[in-house]
Length: 289
Length: 289
Image 1: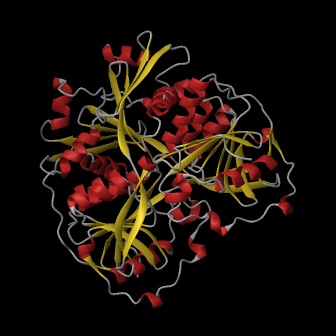
Image 2: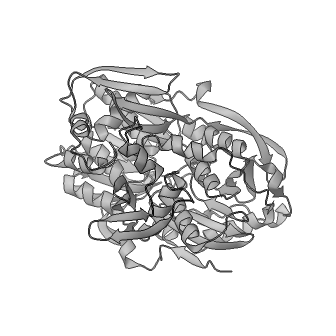
Image 3: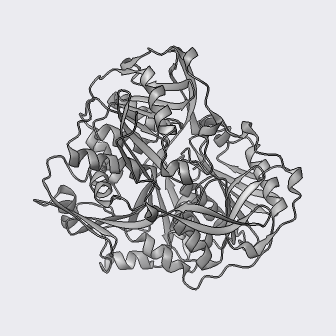
């Protein structure tokens, strides 16, 4: 079973570069390192933030970022997304003035920063949010981990990068990576929005830590289950419990821990058939954030 | 040899919490997860940003953040740092109006965000910056790794957290952790500033990836050598080369790769005496970002 969509394309030469250095013996050595570029995101004429990104899909990143920060509502009508490669700027355009711009214009925000109270906007987006009780079969987790860990990608090649996968049952629909774990999730959100991919029957798998921000974004995307190899923060757990999201972390080999939303889990895997974690899954320079 | 200063205190009960969940067998399980709290940082009356932090040293974090973002210059006179635990706000006060506030007041910034062009400010801080050619002996790297990997800390206990250590020769002077890798570095910067610790003869060791932001912060702190277990980004390497910083990554067991500032390295370690990486160094839920 192969993954339909892997972004960035691990073969794309623009995305990593060979650099010369020395090793522990003082001997010359060349390694490939991931590119990282600034991308300034505008919502209409309002500059919002400069994100550091691998730079492969600025449109997905900008759109997903604005959606996941609660700055764009699903009701805002997107009229265009314009990327200027030379200026390293991407503008997301809407039919009307968005709430964020309106508040900034009227200076009803006390923050000096469009993203200064992002936290407030994101939490506001969770009010009244419900997630569907789509069951998830634990047998699928092991299939998904295996595919993600054995598919060539930048993560595997160069380390220093995070990946997030959108999954449905045993299938990985899309796997996206970026320098920051939040960017990878935002790119998936942008792609889902533009491609009209429904969220209710999906699972999000990330190599990143399950922080408050990761949980909030997943919930705002409407995805009921979030899985990671990495650990949790207490607030991430609280928010997951508050919105009823299924939260699974520290998933390695046979083991995992579920700290929220246990009700969706269907334990249908004979664990004696699951190997312990393969040490080869730990790649050179691998990131387990 | 013990580490003088470890923040947060791994014994502090405020910093992690036990949470109940289930494991891969559906059996009840309790694990400790790290706390994560919002902290809104003000520079005088200007709200700057809300950071997610473990919350142990808001004063160090706020001061270090503002210094490392180029918003506070060493020439700005700090008159106070006030933390309000209930509001989760910390205010750094200066004798006069800072450049950042002045620009925001006069709206000479086009960005809607105090940190929107943070990147520009940080890069500006690197202009004309030189770092001293303090030699570093590779033998010390192995001692430092060993100490950091074998000292009880939240990193070791709960995972999902990043650590940064300030080192001098074979000695780890301070080891600080936080939910975000940048917070850990900023806390060290704030502590160095308030404690009057010179930077020229120090080495910074991080569990985090060597991104542009990590390299810029280290250079702005005046520290000539930066080491990580994790990987690099190309821009991080470029900036290191531009400012002449010694940049070492993928340091595990005997191995490391140096992609900048090789001239400081004194190769004085008999590598046959250094063990390969101990698998036990990979902790449950450990983060290698």
